[in-house]
Image 1 (cartoon, rainbow, N blue to C red):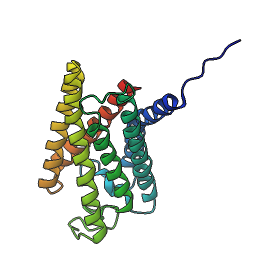
Image 2 (tube, helix red, strand yellow; image 1 turned 180 degrees about the horizontal axis):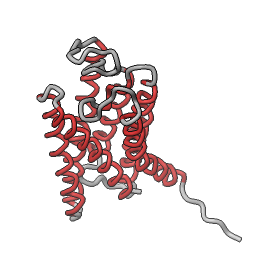
Image 3 (tube, rainbow, N blue to C red; image 1 turned 60 degrees about the horizontal axis):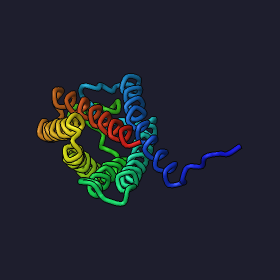
Image 4 (cartoon, helix red, strand yellow; image 1 turned 45 degrees about the vertical axis):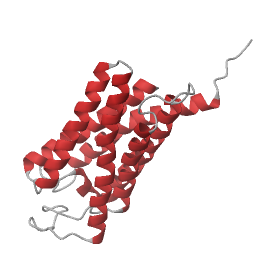
Length: 218
């Protein structure tokens, strides 16, 4: 009786990409469960980052770490998959690197939690707006991570367009544009409800995109 043994590199690549497919639903599920169970948290007023504050804050911190590591794993898997045939397709170098930048941003977000704000955690003044060193670090983390994600969407859009896969190309570009608009709106909107809601939806869209491209490359 003979057995078929897959090359170790191929199994490793599939495992990395499968982990990334799971990352998005896992992140969103952990975030939303907390959003609707943490005392004082209002999903229309508070971004997910604020969940890292307070006693149960370790849950969101762990969420950032796990999802960040899975994204970096995704970047490795994407790079391996896109160069498996010896030639590097369009976007095969910078696409995975930019996905890794998003993962790095998530890890930095765990290391530098957001400052309490807008009445959360309970006991924080509604107009509290002090920015600490860690808060500045969190802002830098978000800039690195979200810029990486936006750029990755556009690079993969070019990759799929060159491959003649118009649906994935359009989905990638539209995701990048919408995420940029939501992030810019959040930065300029000073935490208004419309900008928070738009950004929440953009985060879900961004994770959906990562899940989609990693599933496509599995």
